[in-house]
Image 1 (cartoon, one colour):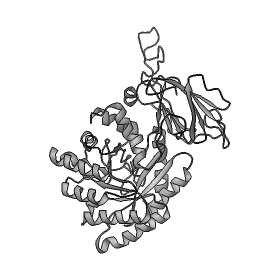
Image 2 (cartoon, helix red, strand yellow):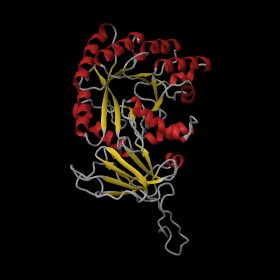
Image 3 (cartoon, one colour):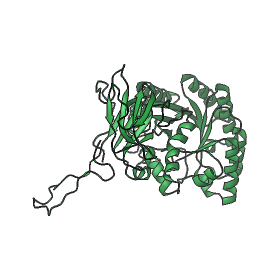
Image 4 (cartoon, rainbow, N blue to C red):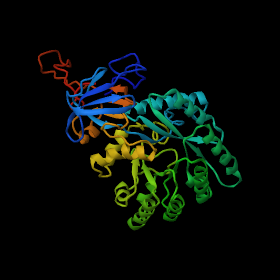
Length: 420
């Protein structure tokens, strides 16, 4: 079990992070998914070199990653920072900007500790909160710069009719303030097609991505959305799309083909729903992948009313895709890493020279084992270690000759090796 919560590292700890003008950082003895044991030298925000273990000798800080599997860092494509960590709050959760910023900061650091070096957060605008919650999340983004990349998605409740006119103006204001994408839940609007059309129009006007909530099991509605989304220059994502699982197989297959033809990415939530989902469930990821749909996975609710025990852990999402949806471990991890980053418009990451230094080291030797017992983690963002989580498990034997209940020997957790 982790011995501490993720926290901002000390920039003066040269052996871990270096300083503002830090020299190259070398990750030593890491295992890659192809079985190679390598050293990886990081310079600034990119990988400078990858070589066999012991081959990269350079001045600067070094991190011993023997016993760790080194992976491209995951990203979180579907969070709700404004409602995170509110499940235990009596009564309605406070939407005062100071409270939202505090929760959003804590949630982002928790997810960073899990390995997500980039985060896309859906934030409600309009109604009683106006733009206050969005401003709080944008302030969180500014305060965490250098630790994690946080992008806000502006989410109005209504966009059609008289009630939606003010929200449509507010949506444009949200983009001017710094929201990086437009979103929302067409299913909650009296005119779902009109809502989706309004979002797509604003996105085209401002040149930004679209990320919408839907759990609709209406194949006609999905077909209309796919037709409207086709050809959008900037990315279009929808999720959680659990409603596809409730359709007859042939209808689900036709919807998947339409989404693939439109170039829409589906962001599923294997850990449960979120504030925009009416029913729990998971999208039919194998059917979608077979149709050629890009499928990413997010965490959704982080301990709010939609999922009071949500962990916000990308590796748990990958574990569930492998264990419950039948994906191979490497495809499940791609959903929370390469596909999540692509859905968010982020650069591709590989453990190769020239790629961004966005990395996650997990104690273990094989990806399947890492997804099963991913306790000890070291997170690298922009070429520096920004979070560590360590775990040690002890086994006690009262027959060792000592007093009952005292440990004979502290043994490392088989899934973690006992190291940091």
